[in-house]
Image (cartoon, rainbow, N blue to C red; front, side, top):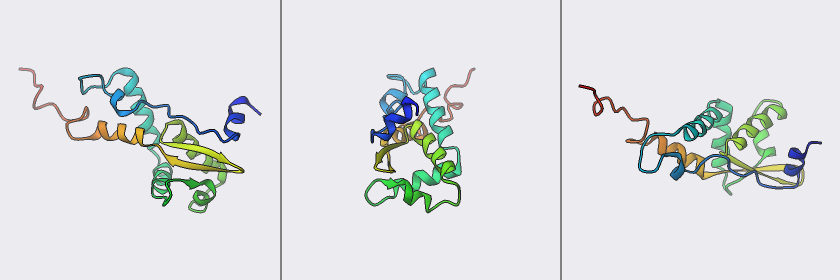
Length: 137
C-alpha cells in the first residue's frame, strides 16, 4: 500500500489546500491573481457535479456537523467506489475534511472554501459587471 493512503488510515484529518477568503483576493484589490484564480477554479470544478453538490448539502445539514460514509452511501444508488471518488474530490478541494474512525470515514464541511466562494460571488465582488464604470471613452 502506498504511503499516501497509509497516512489516511491512521485517522488523520486531511488539511485544507485552498486559500482562505482573506488571501483569495489581492490585498486592497478586488481582482484575482493567478494562484487565487486557479484555487477558485479548482473549488468551482469540485462543486460542478450534482452528486458532489448533494454530498456537500447532506454533510452540511448533519445534526452533529459530521456524517459517516455509511450514512451517505444509503442516500445514493451508486457503487461505493464511485461515491468514494466524489468524496475524494471534495476533500482534495478542501470543501470537506475526512477523519478515519475504525473502518469508517467521517466527513465534515470546512468553512474556509465556502467563505472564499461567497467572497467571490458577493455583490460588488470580482465577478461584478464593471462595464458601466470602466468604459473606455
